[in-house]
Amino acid sequence: RLAINYTLNDDWSLYGQASQGTNPAGSNVIFADPETVLAIQDARDAGFITYDETTFRSHDEEELTNFEIGIKGSALDNRLQLSAAIYTMDWDDMVLGAAFDWEGDVVNGTANGDPCPMGVASCWNDGTSPNAVAFNGGQPWDDDEVASGMVFINSGTGDLFGIEAEATWQATD
Image (tube, rainbow, N blue to C red; front, side):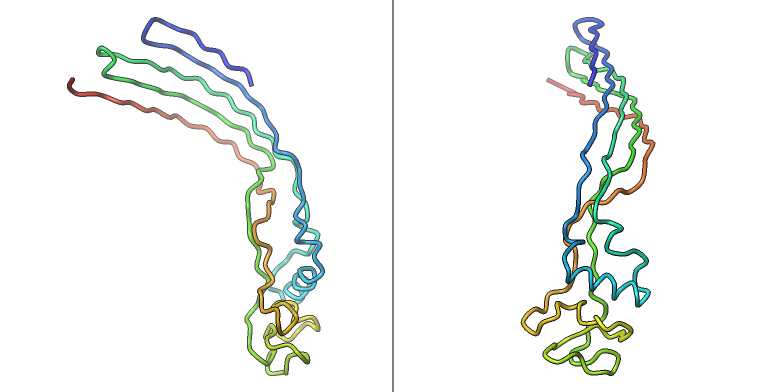
């Protein structure tokens, strides 16, 4: 980060800054969990999703480059305070949080009219996959939905720009 400040007088100053930073690459270990892998395969086989268990297993490093110039100051015996800036940002491989859910529609005791596998109280009702039970935990004592919780994925790029201003005015003493 490079920042420059220039004082015009006792009341006003100009500033500028340029910065570049990265957020390291990472992985989402939930996509290696065997139960999750089965659920994703079932959901893909049924046409519920289009990705597989390797699609979001990791995310690339994100990079952000920012340029900003602005002015800060006061007037009217310090009763008016002003801050204004113009900025632009180039954001590559944005890393944002996401949550996935591969539960399907749960029907107690049947999957598309067919009985659930032995010992399983609920299963996914599509019936197109032999692993249908993976959508709902797979064991009678485990009725948790198969879901990712919070994971991080690359969400594209962004070219952001804007103007911001803030003023405070004290009308009377």
